[in-house]
Image (cartoon, rainbow, N blue to C red):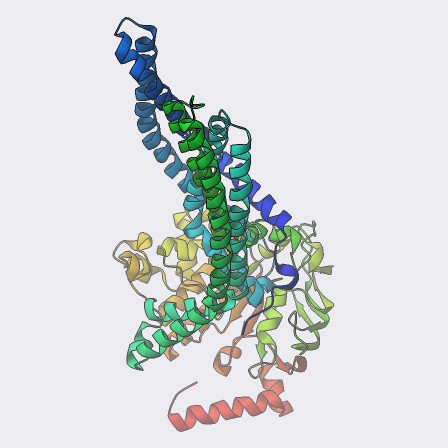
Length: 620
């Protein structure tokens, strides 16, 4: 179903500013390349006018030169016209490949600059609310424009300038016959050009309106082409289904675009017929002048001005056609440009804090009346959490799915801010801290931690990215979680890519989880992170590896305020204190023994899991 654009549609002013910004950014990307391309474009634009004038001059002089001989002024002038004509033609053949080479280089440098600016803009957003917003996902889909459009933009921009210069120079040539000729031709060609331009506008708007459908079609395409779903696509026989869904959503997404194209083409054809009629009137008038007695135009002059008239129509149409293609290629450009500045214009979270989170007396972490619901939704995920964790204490967050455990961690990491209430660290509202400085105190392993298809060094070192070149620090982090021998036993040791796609090795789920643990330890050692968050750290571990983690847990959590989220109660018991969440509220808080004695929610789930272990023969 098509989503209305509403106020999100760019105005013509925003489109104009975006295209002006393209010119500025391309010039910044490679100033020397831009200058060479501009000069070459202008020279190519005036070449047709010079060729017509010199050819007309040569044709006019040639009969008299042939009659009077090589010593006459007519012969000398004809030869001069022929030399100028040859030099201009030869020069244009030299300029063209030089301009093309610089144009190609400028397009590539411009694309690299735009890609970097989008990455800078999106990664500067302080939280993750944008990434869970479908409208923002549409904008990111639109930003794929960068993969193919910049080079085309530079090429078509050059074509537009060249055709504009050519039109102006040809107007001067045709005006040598009569001023009304170029006026008539421009007057009939410009409306047709505007019609073509507006047709592209309608098509671009239709494509943007249907971008959710196009995004869905891209998703189904990725199911067929990406590695992760490849096994299930084949195992479950989903090939035909994926292809059919991709076709369906693509056709739905393009339906309005094609309708606009049919309508626009009809208008363009009608107005182009009017332009051709204007050319016929001008051409007939010039032909009568050449055939009059005595003739008012020589043969050479008739050739020059009549060909100029034809090319005025062609060049003017080409200007609008090129401008229309720029608009078609760049219709998504305003949305891409918005991504440059999104952290400033639409931060969705207050990141104005300036206090240092380091060098203060560490007293603990407190959640005070924290309530939260995701932007654009009505359901409360957290319903008033009050919780204090003294500095250095480890607690386990327990509860059924949807209780709010992961949301609480997102708020602690300041991916979102509470809708109501506040979170304080060492007695200070976390919103008052400098955001990056505050996050340096966090060492986290998320349930959906990232498996970087990069070297083992990078996968561990990203915990303290600025120190990932320090071998001893890396080895200590890996050693403390028991993964050092595995890493150093890889084919290229620390430099081994952890992906077969890059001629490396694939790891098991348990191995990846220990790599993630090493990354968290790297944060602790390399950045002095004293807030440790472990979200389902044993989810991919077997009983033996879980036991090894239990042995390493003391090293991981020593001296750190630790939040451990797990559904495994054998893991939960690692913590000094257990907090049970139910429907976004803290309903139980105590030690393992005290909560069992209380015989509440925790005791019930613990006994259910213990019974399962006993009946299946799995040990805790």
